Length: 232
Image (cartoon, rainbow, N blue to C red; front, side):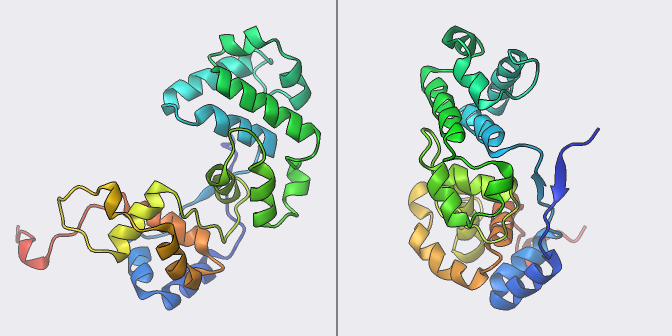
């Protein structure tokens, strides 16, 4: 079965070469993590992708998946069209598990899709990143971070830097800051977005690739000093 995932369309080999040349520490992280393995989900329209994003906000993935399944079941196991969502009775949507806040966000998403604020898939592919972020952020429940995730993971844009993302800030600290092995990372230790922006300027036009590696930095097991590596 087709998973709907595909490789990004930009030149990964060129991106990795230029990033390593521009920033030696980032290059060391790239070497340690290994091949770039981001796959983008390109089968959904912006409306469908944002519908799912709203459902998953502030919920455990399993709970959100269950709500999504019940919602789609009400529309024949398909993503509803915006006009269908607007016409659906509130009782039906609430029965799927939608909170009042999420229901209002989905209604607003549908209305702003119909009035053209949220572009179609064909239209959004022609728009620059900053325009997409500005337009999507007009939707109730959609902020800059959600728009940036769509740019990276749905549209496969190569130069997006989600500077407020916790994982990005933590990965940046682990890669470029000073931490002690075994010491918990607290919020006050995380770098400021403005600080990261200054260094990230050298990663253009491949900041999405750099971001993917910063996320991976959070998953790496710290390598002990050579003197602590057992001989057998």
